[in-house]
Image (tube, rainbow, N blue to C red; front, side):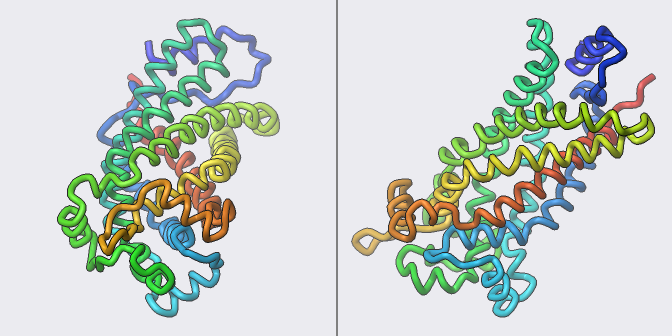
Length: 339
């Protein structure tokens, strides 16, 4: 029996006076081909809408001085035009499809497997959901980073190419290579750094995304249940679908805010490791974690670690809200027809 079926059986065993959560859609209930095809289309649309915010966040993180989003936006619009907000987008979009496929597969399989185990152990619905979602978030983040890290390295270098302030204030530190497109960046990185060049910051990416993803999914499931209970009482059965989407959006935004705040310093270090180089004795080499930390301390202390927090907060909240509502909508679209 699947996790969703086990949870539904437990719900039916409770009294009818309780407020019920919407029925979970389990991995075994999904039409996999529809799930991945529709997922690629829907999440590509989300990525397209949010990409300019990611560009602003990345440029703020590698900037040696504090620059507002408004000033960066005006500079991009003036000197680079609309294309400046989408530098590296093609590379990022190509990586989104396999990364999302890995992420969603690991997420659903782990959630289903761990969920079945927790229910059989006799844990409560709330605990079972938190544990299964937390474990699923951890494994899905690790799986996705195998694809995401190389994509991040290439796309982020393309994002900051037009940032003239970096070339002016960080001579010998900003990567000196100029890239015409993603394929050119891939070729040059492979030539200068070898395959390891694509996995700069991989370890710190895991340290950033695995725990935060585990906490995000666990806190999301708890927030969803907490918000749904009082919210459900004011809605009729016909309004369940719309009400559920509102609750999902509120829960996602709640889970995202704290995650952005806690992981911001590590994300800034990771971005610099992937984009910037160090120079020693006239030779260019990959920047180390300690060099990145020291440069941030020189530039502004702890405050420098939080450059880009505004756009990252907005990006994570909007991305999580659209992702979770799209994700739940996708699961309903891809559910197998019951005989």
